[in-house]
Image (tube, rainbow, N blue to C red; front, side, top):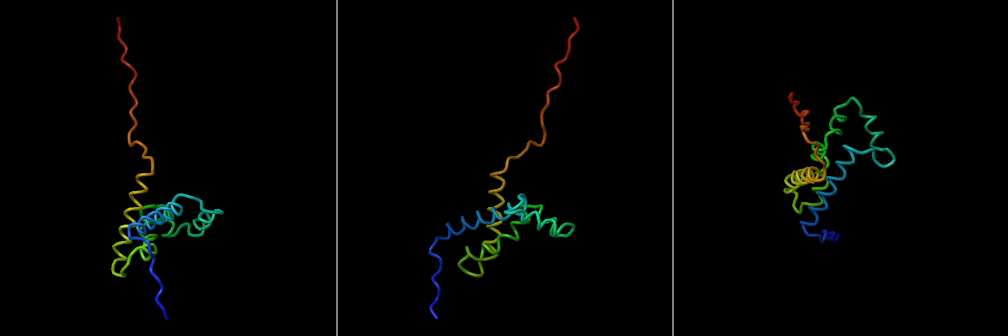
Length: 117
């Protein structure tokens, strides 16, 4: 039986695609309703379970979403764990780079002091 040809994509390309896929799927699961409200229905089913808390945390989700993509990115089986962690980290960096941060403190100046003459 002939061996199947491996992807001709370079590692960098596979890693970039894996990062984007990890980020997109994690973001959809954590922050969107999903196509046809499928994610909303899933959330309703798992409400009150440990999985419900996981679905609320983008960063936690990347840890679980990345491994299947790592299988496609890594060339050797022993590299899958390292690539999985790297994909999760890269997706987290991408999330931080694309999310507007609200300021922790808003400065509101006091009314100017009144002077008596």
